[in-house]
Image 1: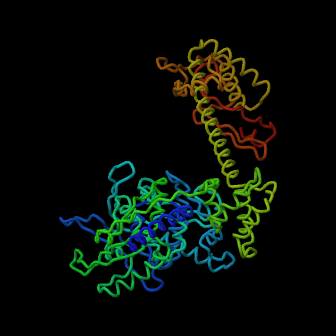
Image 2: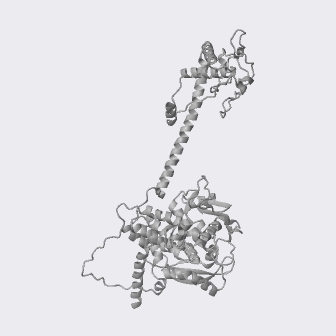
Image 3: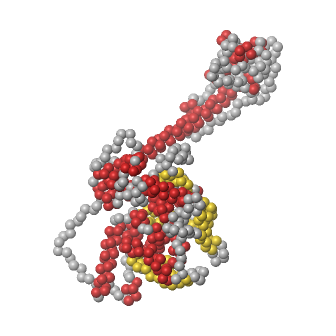
Length: 612
């Protein structure tokens, strides 16, 4: 009876501990495909060979995972592992899906603060830089299948690195100078991140754990959740499976196995994630000694499960040993309290993203809640945190306790200096600039297309004008040009230009506003190419001018002579097109087809004029 009472007491204690745990969790959701496969060497010394191959009963390879490291930067070890799982995964969670190709991670000092590394120590920043390069250069040869979020079966078979890294001050793909560390995802990795299912993990808990214990948590958490969901008293995993997917040294004798696992499990027992472990000997597929580890979920595991499932309570589990004995919980008489319970007001809740802004700067969640609960009306707390980022990045050696500096800025409600641009303001400005650039580009495209349309309409109109009328206009414009210019080539070019401009005034075509409106309405505007350089209708052959018809050659200019160079120093050279080398009679309307800008007038005493 006393033993049953103690069991019931322990159960109540677990429930209360679980409730307390749930209030302090920092849940992030990590993809479940690549994260279960090892990339890092978690040993402090020595090398590891990550090479996993699994085949079907017919001998077909269903999983291949090989990791090779850079000789220059070395194996990706514990710091590189923490960088990927604590920092990069958090940024991926914050970015949402679909992920951008380029992801801002933050400055090296910001990352140091999040990993609880001293920001004033220059060696930490150097080590972080090296860890980034170790992760970026780890080459993976992979083949596997996985089920995507939409239920489809996906296949990956590639040799890849997961991402590239761009450090502060280096050039981004769009040409901008990087204001922090960025990573650029490579295609297969990016596609898996966007399509793979996710699972909840406690980021704050992972930050506290040593690397080997953290890796165990990542591997076992799915099995713990499955046990709680299905009301199983324990979760189980084979020792060989843990070693394979954590890249740990595997032993084949019971005592070394238990000694190795005792170090890994000690932090989880202390935290209440698991409360017990039992080893059962077995044999693996290669007839090697193996052990099944049966793990009893503790109150922390229950709290994670409840919070990750939207407040759903884990089903009550009966201790396996008590069940085997047939013990039943003792029935207690319910006592009615003599005093009325005073309802306590519910604590205020805050946006998890806002809490994450404090956490990533090394401030505990408890302190973050206290700061947020005492904000002044209209206080720009995120801007104050970003102001702290700016000061620390500008003079990192000055701030030996960055978290305390952030707290000071918030508690004192430090005003934001005029001209300081917050991240949200920067993003809004960049978005506005992008929209303006898009609008300018769209306007230019309309103008280019309108010019093509207008020239085509002018060409079509000229083809409909009476040739005699065109000849009269030509003669008039030729005489006007002779009165203003002396060079024969200039006279002819100006005359052609003026004739076309005159006829263009008469041509019926839409304004650019009407043209743009039709495009917006989706109404197509036919733009046909202009006719050949003769400008004659397709059924009309060019004719030879009669001897008595006026011709530009009668001005004294020899037919076929090109125009001289411009006379003004620094002005652009204007060369006549090849079609204008042999000039037709000006009276012929066929000469009206090409529109040239009027060339500059030549000084009659210049060398260029004498050459003409």
